[in-house]
Amino acid sequence: MTGTPIPAFSPRTPRWALDPYRFHGVDDDLAPRSAAPVDDDYALLAPRPERRPSFALAATDRRRLDLHAALTTTGVAPLPGDLEAIDVLSRLDDSTVRSVLRWITSP
Image 1 (cartoon, one colour):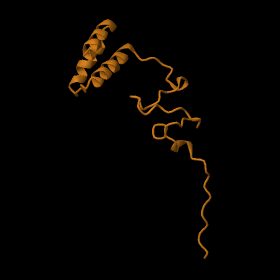
Image 2 (cartoon, rainbow, N blue to C red; image 1 turned 180 degrees about the horizontal axis):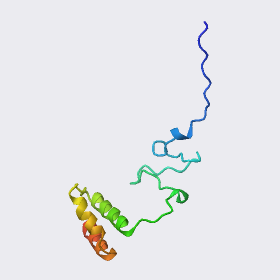
Image 3 (cartoon, rainbow, N blue to C red; image 1 turned 45 degrees about the vertical axis):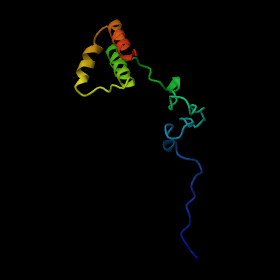
């Protein structure tokens, strides 16, 4: 039988195919990392410090993200009409936003 030859594939998987969020324990330099415990609340691993962005967020952006995170964690997903209110709140000073965050997250 004279079939077409089977192409030889490299046993090495290309880097772009190794998604660390799909395949836990594989990162950019292909060195294994310890996976998070199964019973842990956080399934994703924290980014390595050298891969974090080197810039700081503006204070209003940081406050906006904090407000979104606090609302979402307490089970109150912001509706599209709420985005303007969150934007106004994020322009307030740090102590006021901290108080609002405390009100949102307190039981």
